[in-house]
Image (cartoon, rainbow, N blue to C red):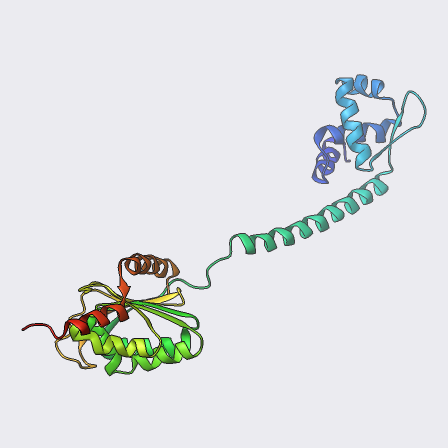
Length: 278
């Protein structure tokens, strides 16, 4: 035969606290009572009973009378449990709504990257030329920033990179280039100027070569030293679509750009001076 020791845990499992279960069971067994008598029967404080009764009223398990002093009666068990179920269903729907809202907000706040950055070693001049041309003609849409030692300017002229640059400019893109517009490189620099490249001269620039396309992806190499102008010439260059690395290269470019002067101005000065003395 079932007793209170079985009933109380079941009520707690249904969402009641231990105090709520004890008060509800007492009212259910012994009938309606005012808070003072409940407190005396349960051997607890009246204030504690008031708080518990208020909570049970909110849960639809106890009804207060309209008379004074107020008498509290337990709602019939089936009706009370049904009311509790409906309340939990409402709470569950509300939690589902909040869950969807949180998921939507988290997509905006913590938007994950679609993929990890890609890094690839370019091992030959031919690979570098192919990458540069394909980037200019099919990937880049708005801008190319490039710092180019003199010999690489010659490569751009010889192997069709300038045609890709011209295509980007004709689509409305902007190309800025830093190079050494000294005597050995004047023709190659002038060719870039003629197709619309904004070239700045940095005296004896021979540092890192890099190109940044739309400030998103890049190719870079240190100390390219061509022994011969051949597509088989081995080089060590790095391709990356890491936006953080691209931002670093853009920052480097802007620093160099401020130090450089317009290449057209430098070429004009050199032509006035005449060929270098041997």
